[in-house]
Amino acid sequence: MAAFDSLSARELAAAISAGDLSAREVAEASLEAISARESEVQAFLQVTPELALEAADRVDAARAAGDVLPPLAGVPVAVKDNMNLQGTRTTCASRMLESYESPYTATCVQRMLDAGCVPVGKTNMDEFAFGSSTDTSAFHPTNNPWDVMRVPGGSSGGSAAAVAAGEVPISLGSDTGGSIRQPAALCGVVGMKPTYGAVSRYGVVAFGSSLDQVGPFGRTVEDVALAMDALVSGGHDRCDSTSQEVEPVFARALSGSVKGCRVGIIPSFMEADGLTSEVRRGVESAARALEEAGAELVDVDLPHLDAAISAYYVIGPAEAFSNLARFDGIRYGYQEPDCRNLAEQSARSRAHGFGAEAKRRQMLGAYLLSSGIYDKYYYAAQKARTLITADYAAAYERVDVIIMPASPMVAFEHGAISDPTQMYLSDMYTISINIAGNGGITVPVGLGESSGLPVAAQLVAPAFKDERLITFGAAVERAFSGADFSAPVLGVAPACAGKGGELA
Image (tube, rainbow, N blue to C red):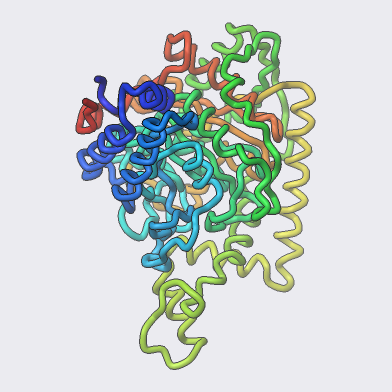
């Protein structure tokens, strides 16, 4: 049988359903791959062999009983460590929650389990999702499988790296300002942020409540589509007031045609300062591929897009300050010993429990929400948000999707960007989509000619038209993989391929 990392989630599920593989064999191969590759990649904060093998045995028992298996039965999945999964810790990569045991399972995780997935562990992230590199984790950085001296992106860098290293075929991340799409681009995998409200956030530790959204990573657009169908199955979640009814039509959208559709290009984005030539050429190649498949390329203008980063870094920290106020060392979270009163307990616990970036964003949020400052910045940011959302709505009256970069550069070296402001600019192509609430998908288009590292294109669709992302993403993927059906554009990172994870 082929190596574990050479099979997609769909292929693994089909082999298990047909009896060619057992779910236990697949789970053991995934755990073996993690054991063999983690010393270099460091994608995980916690590996869960007991949970994985118990879930795999349930799948095998159901197949032996003649039951119809769910669509992802036996497929290993990794979960970002800001999502609760009973039987694991949920640390958000922070000392503040280092010993926090998940009391329940997040809806998004439960829906993946209901689809038959086998949970193999919790992945590393930037602390409380504050970052674009996964270097702000309190426990250890994660390395890009294509070059371990470089970052995988963030904040869902562990989830992206686990897929790129062939440790799991699919994983879950969260995206507040690009935290799925940017690491997917840097690691050469597919990553999708659905429309805000498409996937329940119940059980996900909040960063920015009006911005956060859960989505999947996979090596192929098809695997991401299957994961999306699992995430939206069950409809509205009564535990999340923002959750919406979304039809599970993503797998069906794979066979859709782009012929006669219109693809928007934002000229100012393609000429922006900081965009490297190899990334620009990659996105232009993806646009030409869609044109060759029958789509029409149309220039569109989003006049208020320049305000997106400024608006985000007002709204995001303000919401983070509010959401993280609960971590005070009194109700739960890290508790500093030997404090004389509650005020000292809270102050010292927060000072020692949070890392530098978490403190920076909370302090900024506190300032932005303070009297006399709120109207000047926070209110202005919300007005800019309204204008940016209206710009996208106007653009979608002319086009079906918009194509743009996901990251201005390929993966950068650990420590290469030390200035927080420069780090924030690495999200310049992703932030506006969270502000508007639209969905986006990152699809790899090959390796940069000068860096030899993954390059990707990002597609963005109107709100609750996320199935278009699958149709257009599959068209790009076919153009660059040379396959008639869904196939990975890039294989498992060379340093990881074939290292552990053999199937019988």
